[in-house]
Length: 384
Ligand code: SAH
Image (cartoon, rainbow, N blue to C red):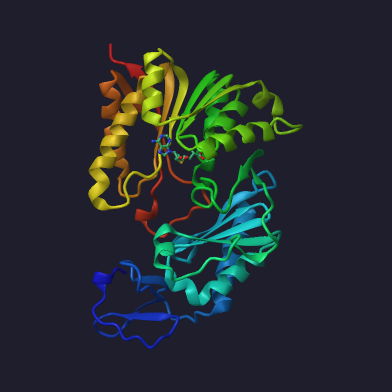
């Protein structure tokens, strides 16, 4: 419920808020967030008791579901995805023994210890790291402890986890999001299968971060993987991730045999320069950061997606595959696809979308708007 949906507020200082309609019928029980336009976060639409036990139970219930979804090959996953796991404004990600609790709303302050306890009680968790969204950190409502760990042992100098058997280092304190883009897990696995099944040799991974798609492409059998990211720490971590997977096990031979080229550069600049050098790839993946946090930035975001599609389409070999992703919630799937198709047309390529994917299973959503991730797999053909 947004600020504009609420007519009257009676503040009795309670940590739980109750919303009624104009006829005084119960609408919802939730949390009242004075600091956000999203003023009321729904915890239940039915009468219920909201207390520490209930909230800890919601964390453990969400964790129990994940136990069914992941085996020992995947130790990095999302345990709580906000409203999709009945904890709006709360994200909990797990990287092996480390749980990262990230809050997006100051309304959770009275319940912080219960959330931390819920994390600490998960089997195998040795420490809980607390992070705040940028907007929440700016309010100063919740203080962070130095070192970030709010429960358990200090963070080791290097943390790592596995995703479908591939090992990644992660920085739960400073890394983007909570350290890794877990939402793309299934799409990374799809890239591995695509490379293996199509026999693709060369792969370009633009906006690579720490090399998620790159390593799966290599394990699928690519002989050359070029990764581009503007962040130096991300490229350095990618370099280390390659080495982490060259040890025994892990289908090491595929990764060890692949030639990696890791480029720290602006994506637009790097793609133009590759075009000028006449380079092409069997598979090109473009997974840029979110381009619009406000509605008025949507058109600008769509133009950027179009430009990226043009640049990327020029780098796809004949019969190759283009994979284009958008994590901008403000951009609708249909509009994204339209600008991608038109962008490719400007490169004289006909884009035929062969598959449309979203985020991984551990990112359940309570409402359609929360389905932000769009990932298109497309074949490309020249117009002739
Ligand atoms: N595909 C990645 C996630 C990509 S997130 C994965 O599977 O893990 C988006 C990435 O884009 C971030 O790593 C960020 O550093 C990078 N980035 C942002 N702006 C950029 C730019 N202009 N050029 C290149 N990289 C950029």
